[in-house]
Length: 92
Image 1 (cartoon, rainbow, N blue to C red):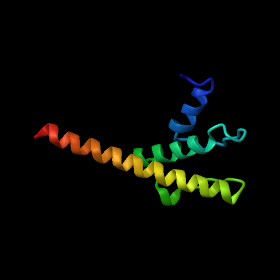
Image 2 (cartoon, rainbow, N blue to C red):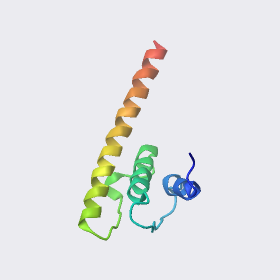
Image 3 (cartoon, helix red, strand yellow):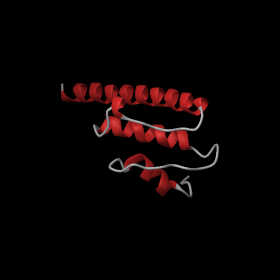
Image 4 (cartoon, rainbow, N blue to C red):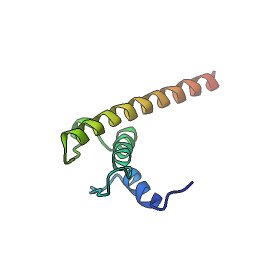
C-alpha cells in the first residue's frame, strides 16, 4: 500500500544532494525517514558517518534516532555482505 506522502518520503530518503528539514507530528515516521536517509547516504558513498549532523529537540529523540541508525546500518551491512557472498557464489 502506497502512503499518501510517499513522494515526500522518497525525497527525504533519496535526494541526498541537498539539506532538508523534516517537520511532522509525532508518530508519522520522521525517525524512520531520517535514519533511512542517513543509511542511503552512507551506503551510496555520499555521506561519511563522522560528518553527518541531525538535530532533534529532545535527548530521548536523539537516542532513538541513534539506535535506529545503528540498526539500519547493521542491516545494510548484512544485506550488502549477503549480496556480495551470493555474487561470488554465482561467479564460481
